[in-house]
Image 1 (tube, rainbow, N blue to C red):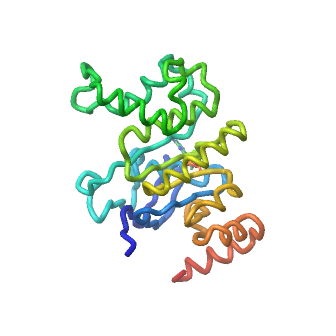
Image 2 (cartoon, rainbow, N blue to C red):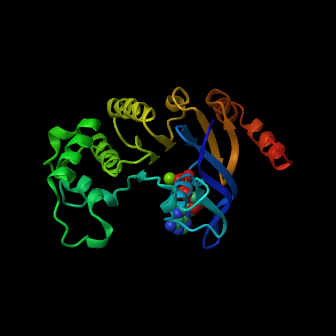
Amino acid sequence: MKMEIIKMDKISVKYGYIEALRDLDLVVNEGEYIGIVGPNGGGKSTLLKTILGLVKAYEGNVTFKGTTIKKSGLTIGYVPQITDLNRIFPITVQEVVLTAKIPAEKSWFHKYSKKDLNDVEDVLKKVGIHNISERQISDLSGGEFQKMLIARALAVNPNVLLLDEPTAMIDIKSQKQIYTLIKKLSKEMTIVLVTHDVKEITKQVDRLIYLEKNILAEGDPEEVYRYAYLRPVSVAHRARARSGGGE
Ligand SMILES: Nc1ncnc2c1ncn2[C@@H]1O[C@H](COP(=O)(O)OP(=O)(O)O)[C@@H](O)[C@H]1O
Ligand SMILES: [Mg+2]
């Protein structure tokens, strides 16, 4: 039996006058590996942020196993989309990953335990960057930086991992390594991956979603890929069919 762990119910989000999501319904099942694609500005980052509570929906609500995130017992790891801005902090890889281990109540004077340090070592190994843990993050390549953000998300021991374009602006070799890693992680946790690499993920996700303010196509990855990128007209047809009632 599939268990619904995240449910977005009639979600609408606005930034001022800009509508980013409109009346969006989405269910994420336990153990699922979902890919989200769509045009720039289509609301992909907003969707992830709404799940995380970083953005408030003006309509609709998000529930976790039918309740609040706290009561659900779920832990969500998040890999934010890289911008030039978040690349300039002068701290080491290990410090960035450790920040995930600070208990919220005593963030100022918290001392890291041996266990914290071991856990960090473990996640750095898992993503393959333990050999550069002392390095300043300003000296990391794009691929290393992305792997560090994934390590940081994994440090909270998540059962759900949300990734926002984890392979944007990096070399092909790192991209391949990251997709291999995510595929491996998908066997241990639920994953929602936002990306531009439609071709690449069509081969590995369980379900593909094409998002443009609302879900215009979703389901079997190959089919959605064809609808969304090879016969764009069909997307509009399908969208109309959906809003006309039923899927
Ligand atoms: N903080 C913000 N303030 C104002 N507008 C925003 C903000 N974040 C996103 N938007 C707008 O909301 C829409 C959806 O953005 P976003 O969720 O980032 O899309 P995507 O990740 O698919 O590119 C876009 O029109 C974008 O310009
Ligand atoms: Mg985005």
